[in-house]
Structures are given as C-alpha cells and as structure tokens.
Amino acid sequence: MRRPNGRRTRLIARTELRRTWRKLMGTTRGTLLLLGSGLGIIVYSLAIGAGAFFFGGFIADSDPQTVRLATTAGIVGLLGFVGFFTLQHTVKSAGEPDAADGLLTTVPYEDAAAGLLAAEAGRVLFVLTIPILALVSGLVVGAAGVLVAAVALVGSVAIALLGTVLGFGLGLVTKLVANRSAFVASHRASVGAAVSLVLPLGWVAMTAVPTIQLRVLQLATQSPLSWPADVVLLVLGNGGNPVAAAVATVGLLAAFPVSAVACLWLAAQTWYADPVQPDHEFDADKRTLSDRLLAGRVPTATRVVAQKSWLRAKRAPVTVQFAVMPFFFLVYHLQIVILERVVPPTLPLTAGLASAAAFGAAFSLNPLGGEEGVLPLTLTANVSGRAFVTGLVLAGALPGVVVTTLLVAGLGVAAGTPPVTLAAGLTVTLVATLVAPAIAVGAGVVFPKFESSSVQGHEVVVPSGWAFGLYFLIFGVAVAPGSLTYLLAVRDLFSLPVDTTWLLGGGLVATVGIAVAGAVAGFLYAANRVATYRLD
Image 1 (cartoon, rainbow, N blue to C red):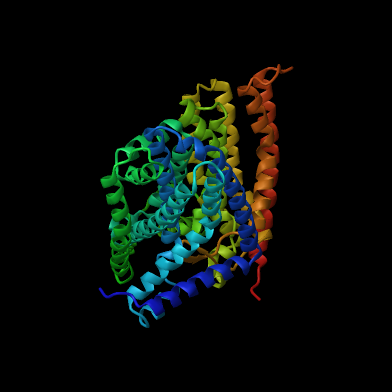
Image 2: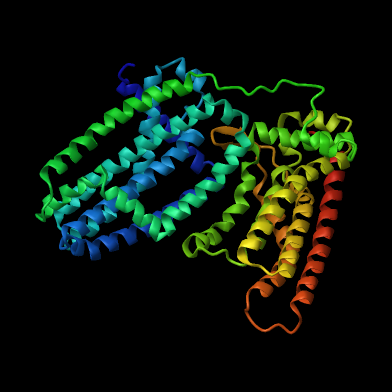
C-alpha cells in the first residue's frame, strides 16, 4: 500500500462533489430535496443554537457527572448520526467510484479511495457547518464561555470526521461481505427485506425510546467515549482527569490515520474481488414451489410471467425495493409498541393494508418499463396482453395473501381484537391484497417509466412518481369504507346508531364494490394497452 497522491486525491474528491451537486441541481426532484433539506437544517440549527444559549451556562455550572453525561451524549449522538448515514451512503453509492473500470486503470486505488473518502467528508461538513456554527455561537453568546465554545468547535468537527471515516469503513465492510458471502448472494431478497424492516425499527428504538437511550448512554459513559468530557471539565476548572483528557486527545488524533489506512485496505479488497455468483444452473426436471402451485391451474404463459417476476426479485431485490415504502407508515405504531409495550388496536388493519399496498406495487406498478431491455422480446412473444397482466397480478397477490394473513391474524390476536372485528379487518386486507396488483398495473400503464434511476449504486428502472400517486389514490379510496368502519369498531370514539356487526358488514361491502370496480377497470385497460403497445 502506498501513500495517496495529494493532487489526484483532491481532483477525484472535487469531481465526486461536482457530480453530487449536478445530480441535485439537474432535476426538479433533486432541487426540491436540496431546498427541503436546507430548510430542515436551518430549523434544527436554530434549535441547537437556542439550546446552547440557554443550557450552556447551566451545564457549565453543573457537577462533573452532569457535564460528563451531556458531553458523552453529544459525542454518541453526533458519532452515531454521521456514522449511520455515511454507512448507508457508502453501501448505496459512495463506496465505489463512477466508471470504476476506467478510473482504477488510470490511477492507483489508494488515490481513488482517498478521493472518495475526502468527498464524503466534504458532504458531511457541508451539511453540519450551519448546525456546528449555531452550537458554537450559542455557547459564546451564552454563559458557557469562549473556551468551551472553542472545545465544542474542534471536538464537533473531529467527531464528525471520525464518524465519516468509520461509517465509510463499515460501509466497505458491508459491501465486502455482500460480495464474498455465498449465503448473502443466494438470499439477497430475504436479507434485503429483513434489513429494510429492521433498520427503521432500530432507528425508532434509538431515537424515541428513553430506556434504550439511557442504557446506551450508560454504556457510553463507561467507555473511552466519555474521556473527551475530561477536556471540557479541565477547561471549566471543574475537575477532570488530565491523563484521560490527554489520552482522549491523542487517541482521537491517532484514530484518523489508522481508520483511513483501514479504509484504503478495505477498498482494495472490495473493488478487486470478484463477487460470489450464486449457482443458477438450469435443471429441466426440477419442479419449484411455484411449479407445484401453478402448473395445471393457470395457463403456461401466465405462470411463466409470474415465475419470471419472482426470479428477478430473488436475484436482484433492488428492483422491487421501492415496494417496502408502505411499511414505513407503521413507524408510529411500532413506536407505541416499543414505548407502551402494547399492540394498538388499529395496527392489525394498518399492517395488513401496508402489506397489500407493498405486494400490489412490487411487480405491477411499471409493467412496461419494468421489462427494461427485454421489452421488445416481451411484446413479440406468444403471450397475450391479458396473460401477461394476469401473471404480474398473480406474482403480487399470491405471496401477498400469505404475508397479509399472517400479519393481520398475529397482530389481531396480540391486540386482543374481538373475533368479528378481526374477521372483518382480515377480509378487508385480503380483498385489498387481491385487487391491489390489478389497480397498480392500470396505474403503471397510464404513467409508464422507462428511464433508469440510481438505486444503491445500480441503474434500475423504478415506477413513476405519478404512477405511485394514482395507485395510492385509488387504493386509498377503495379501502376507505372498510378501514373507517374498522376504526369506529375498535376505537370508542362515539356511540354508534347501528350494531357493530352491521357497521363492519356495510364497510366491507362498500370496500369490496369499489375495489373490484377499480381492479377490473385497471386490469382490462392494462391488458389492452400491453396488447396494442408499439415501440417507437
């Protein structure tokens, strides 16, 4: 391993930052994202500055234990925040240079890796500059003092940079494991789904559950992460261990080169290693689960389309990762489960509808664009438009029925939902699961999308935002009556003029009517559109 060349490192970092800026400013979505993020940063910075102004003096006059807790909490929060998002960004895109084949044959990998790391540090500092300045300004103007503000400035920048390096390194480790592990390569869909659901749950637990936060803080105060607090205590003249302060300073400074060298080594291991390829040998006599379920029950063309959809999702789960989005609406309910240790009565229906919406969108929301480069072969194959659309609908409906049933039944029992109410909620969600793919396929042909987008560093054709909007609008209208009556049944909002059973039955009938009408219309329109579609 050689020392990176400073000029080439700066050039690569500058190029990466320019690409990031162009991606943001080159599209309306990127510009809106930048403006929204900037507004959020300003609001948070004002809150941080106000907190530093009002509470800085209080902490400065507090006992050593309070100062240690406050300092350690700030270190853990900043380090975890920067490290977590840097890890995600590294795994998705920043962990590998654009046009890697060309770049790595032009410059040494050390220069490329150092340039990417420097670019990531630049992005982090760009985001955190205003919040850090607000913190320092609040401490200076308040009663904390200039020395404390100076320590906060230097410490915040150092912790942010350390979090960037550690997050970048952990991201490379994640990519290395994904490339080298035969298990991960063979079970990408399952691993991806588990990670997509576990990460939001972990994030909610860390940011919203006081007991978990307190436990993490207690562990941190007993670790070397609390040693920088001795620097603050020495500046305040409120005790502090000089040895711990010196070790913390030296350790923080030494962590940068050690972590950077580790990142360079990991980059070489990740970029130059051939990814493990799962064994996809074709066996003409092998009968899969889908063969046993569908063979002889549906036409061959329909079965092949459904199997193709499942196989593509298994081998490249990033193509259907967008479908996980409805599950993020469960975050509020999960927060209640974690905080109050009780299952909300509305969670069974909400989880079932999220599952229905997710499986409905996964394979059907972009029927034409989802074929990507093989669209001409699909259109010219001996598959009718109705058979093709039926296959997409089956691909989402069959696994969706299983998952939705397990979710609603399990959560309904855990929540203590009355049997009649639970049966009505389960029926509503199963109807939604069956009709959602047909609604989605109709929305997908109205607003097709053929342009690729970058998802986790891969160019993937994802459904149009307009298709998402139309799909969720029709889906929401269809499930609204059944959902409203279920809500009235489980929540004692006001006295009802009719019996609960009749109320649930009326909502269910209305939902079935609207859902079937929307599904039939979407299915027929999509089948006709696919059958008559012509390439320009």
